[in-house]
Image (tube, rainbow, N blue to C red; front, side, top):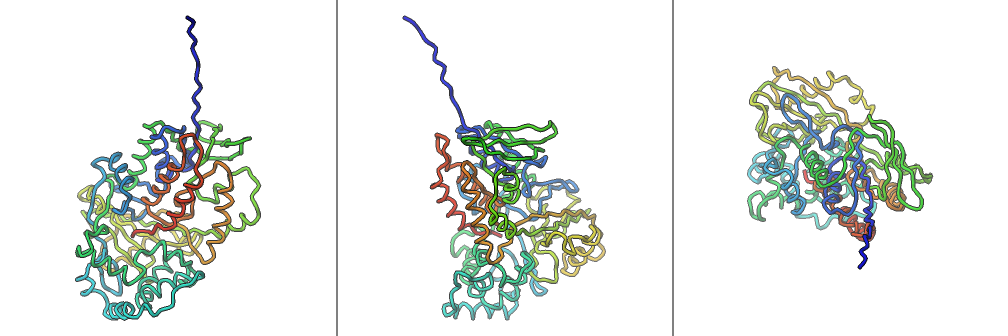
Length: 481
């Protein structure tokens, strides 16, 4: 009897993921675990995480602003993060406060504190609005942030809280901001929603999720670091310090990606590209003719810049709070966080504060010296009662040119044009904050990543209908503060 050895060729498609932030790494981790594709993550920076990474200041893990993993995280995603982080993923009780008209209100909101500290005219305004809100005109398709919030919480809270906060966060008048910004960025956009938050803190409406959060022992960046390790252990390749020079369409399908790193210039081939980098950057890299209307629409998709001011102190703590919120326009910053109070770990005789100053690139404050910015922030914190006038902390400044999207009225049409054109390129998928021009939380971008992986069939084909359904669900994501 003759025996034959038959060689069976097994081919697995290759997927290149652009960007090693939580979205890209989350997708790489899930893809690699499924073993249906070869996975290569390409990242220009020398470390993973992007704006979700951490770095040391005075022996404390500092983040790029105030970050936390919210308890609203989808159970399967939370289970994965608990698996890869183990005991380093800590469940912490929230303790924040809001500075409003010379007073501090607890955040999350608590009934007794609100009764005691909320300005009386504001409380009566909320009650009046609750009684008569059903008679107010409903926002239309062309409504603005102002229209939605005025109908939701009334003129008093808009005037004293939401509108000044909006001007600081997005640099626009409330009437200039799209209604989508209110629907996606403001979870308590009605008196009813606000009251539900307050009552949940008493356990009347069940256990309040807002009272707790998850945070890694070694800073927020540990989430991305562990996702990267888990992805590589499952077979993915993560290329750091690697710049994409050009993306060329292969015939009849797939892509050639030209890369540059310390090792020189080289290329990789991919059957599909999953991009989490900014749409503007992606389109510049594509070696394809770009329609004029897409170019014009890209210019209408604006991002807000951010200046982060880190103040280092030689003492155990500045306050007992993790985050302080400053909606009023007299303060240049919107939030001030104390990272050590997020994890509860750090040197006993050191602490830092991080102040977040939204702005635009080349604005007056953007072009100020680090010393001028630091002194201004310190002076404002003294006025607010957070610091004493005698304290002189060490200062470190970071400028972020592309922190989060601005939803100016009319941006929807511009985004649709760009998104529709990019989506028409076979084998190219975009997701994540930058890829979908979204202002959301980390658990939201992981939902996007998991949705993309869920849309990849066992035969390597990308299920566009399934992806469209996921995209519809992403539109319902609302930022958790």
